[in-house]
Length: 234
Ligand SMILES: Nc1ncnc2c1ncn2[C@@H]1O[C@H](COP(=O)(O)OP(=O)(O)OP(=O)(O)O)[C@@H](O)[C@H]1O
Image 1 (cartoon, rainbow, N blue to C red):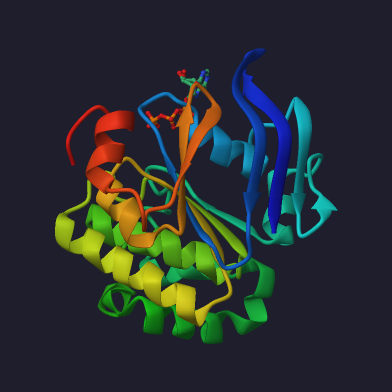
Image 2: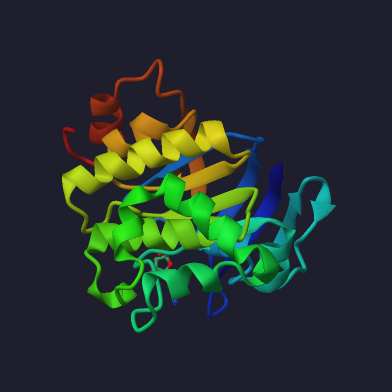
């Protein structure tokens, strides 16, 4: 589905990301783990096209999208839920969801109905302004809004940041359900190792903009990974 080769990107002429290779398969859940400032968000922004790749190639389903702008990548099937969620705080939950349906406005009712089945907590909040929701509810809304665009690949940047544990559980359950109900792949950036372990088929560890290790959560204990790559015991 997504293939990156020899990709370099960064800020103000200073390279931050130096990926030799990254392959994301169809219907896969890939975790990205790393300490603060190691380039996790830079990776997602480069995939989304917010940061241009200075070198290398990015291909989606065999099509070279390296030169695509973010809106072209969105149209090609990539959705991004950035850190901090970035919902529209003045708009109601329903209006936020409608904004996610811009590609298929004529089907907005049907798509929003499907999202409310997947995210039942949003039903009773439909008339509330997005800014009045709790952090966890805003995270669910941001994810639902992204899914309204029918992406094939969803980029999720630290969805558990500042969120209560019970909503983290709900986000895990929702993502697991999505995996069975929708044909999507997810790249999940997180520092919460148990969250990553609950969802990822494979975890890439990123250090100084490079993938230094790939972990199979089924065979490597999370405590060892947390100690080695985050510097604490999980
Ligand atoms: N807008 C920016 N301008 C200049 N440098 C930036 C910018 N954003 C990030 N950087 C730098 O790029 C490097 C990687 O940052 P990035 O946000 O990708 O890290 P991260 O792994 O996502 O960290 P965090 O967990 O703190 O979000 C850091 O050194 C950071 O200071």
